[in-house]
Amino acid sequence: MQLQQLAYFVAVAETRHFTQAAESMRVAQPSLSKQIKALETELGAPLFSRARGNVTLTPAGEALLPLARRMLADADTARQEVAELAGLRRGRVRLGATPSLCAGLLADALARFHRDYPGIRLHVEEGGSRDLVRALARGQIDLSLIITPLQHDDPSLVTEEILRENLVVVSPSHRRAGPPGDDMAIRRPYVRIEDLRGRPMVMFRRGYDLREATLAACRQAGFEPRFAVEGGEMDAVLRFVEAGLGVAVVPSMVLDGRPGLTGTPLAPPGLSRTIALANRKDVEPTRAAQAFRATLRTFLVEAAHEGTLPQGVELIAE
Image (cartoon, rainbow, N blue to C red; front, side, top):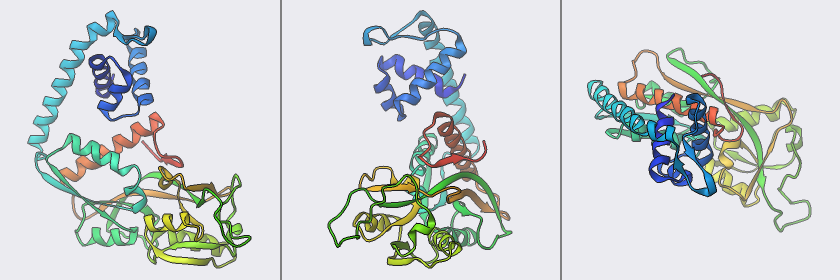
């Protein structure tokens, strides 16, 4: 039995509506229903009657409701007292992250941390892994989500690999007007790196992780990519692709909410990259930073179990 399951149960009991409860808990409705079902299975009795679309408490649900409210209240009291003792009523976390993560799942993890520790100020530094490693070394940030392996391993860093994400070739979703053969859209189940030979590409700025990964893959295949435009950050690169300037190699997670773009997987073995959480070895992370690291781990484990990680992203270890 988990506190989160009890919180979902109380929310449904109070709203008598699964969708409204999911909205109030800021979770997807299928995830909430799945957790309620897991709680019912563990307790060995249904907690809600769903006859004719009406949600009502069963006798088991009626018995559990006051106990669940008390347990949640006690947990909240304990959390506040421990947070006060550990100095987490105030403070800050300075976090570095790559643009693809800032545009993807990081926002939800930050929201959970802010909810649990509203007195902690959050500062996010967005950049490529090289820049973020330098910021760590200078003491400008406490923790950073970076891409590994680094070109030059830094013995002053402690890194923990947490996620693996697939890279895809992104192109416009629809054909655009232009000269014959100028269609940038890719309409195949997969594409090989060799297929990018001679094809105009949109390339990230120098020092960007994805630039180095793309160049290395193309050179290993025996050719130099042809740039239609280069020098952008993630949002700019995606917009340039959408406008039909060329294709690009990007993480699959950044395509959520962009119907104008299509991501085509690379042929096996494909390309992937590993995301790690890094901090300086010679400096113990602050208590607030340690709390964020724990929150992030919990968030990712729950998302992996519930199947809500972005497409193409997998948890490395729990």
